[in-house]
Length: 443
Ligand SMILES: [Zn+2]
Image (cartoon, rainbow, N blue to C red; front, side, top):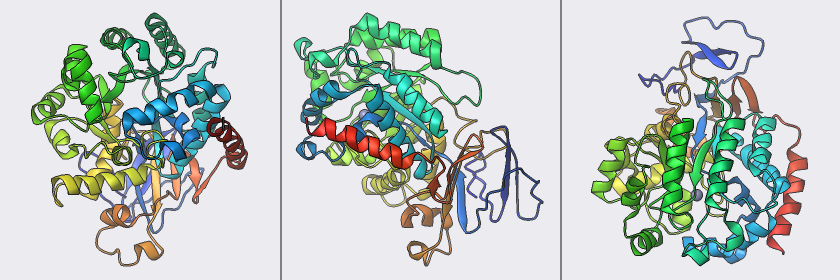
């Protein structure tokens, strides 16, 4: 068991007990495990905290590996997809996409996920409610963000007019969603953050007003930051500032915020982000598929940023596996900063405690410790892929790969058990997803 607690304890043959969704005791093999109403075996397994996904656009699994989009960099890719998403998104599509995407995440050992839903076409309905219903049905801990876009092509932005909202409406809807869904209590299953999409889709004024609103409502802030060369160039050409300067200028350089990608900060900007405690959602697959670059994760962590892992939307990642993103984070860290710079333990740390830090829940999420929530991933370490792993099961876990979890437990309840989703609805939801995805892609 790799607890990822403050001492980073690793127990061989230990046990863990939970009650009411909270871990109540952890013991070694020499101690007796208390009786429980439900007992799950983790023999021949590695037990870790459940993984935390810090960035996603769940609806994008409806345009996954979509042929016309598979070779464009960020801006061209977005401009081709915006109209397809805008014309087709509705409550049913978002609910089914979220359900299937969260099921995929649970199977990869993820117990808490965010979602950055930034497209709210007129008359599409209440899309956040649709995805919260999916997370509740599956039993995942969920941090959806009320995302937004307000700057369309006619105002020098990237999205078409039909994809954006009025800024006063965005702020009113943001507050409404926080009041309706956000649970500030310890152990919360649902929390809301506010998430204007990016410098090329919203105005600096909306960023500023959103930061003020988040302060007033005491919720977190999320957006995309310094994602690619195009992103840098847009900010400098249209707003006269590099992305991190803009972030600072609009009041986001604070530990209330966490940002996705952060591929291109320069060394001085890394120091500023770290000093402010800005969280970073590292999305290695997406950064490679869109050719954006290798994020400086080793330097960001050293500077003091909580760095978590995100799988990003399934039209640019396209897999939604947190385990896979953690493995890629290890490979990219070694490639960029040297083989000793990023270990499997560093990546387990990012995928658990780093994610908890991004979500402002360090202490209760992302660790196996008495008093923390009972969010647990259990990984089988057997079969051909693990033959020869003797010395170090944690390195073996991320280098050799169980690729999916054997048990995924959220709030003390199994969501995945014996390698299968506990919900009996998977086949039905996959059928519905196929029909909806065909509508998106064949229109
Ligand atoms: Zn994104």
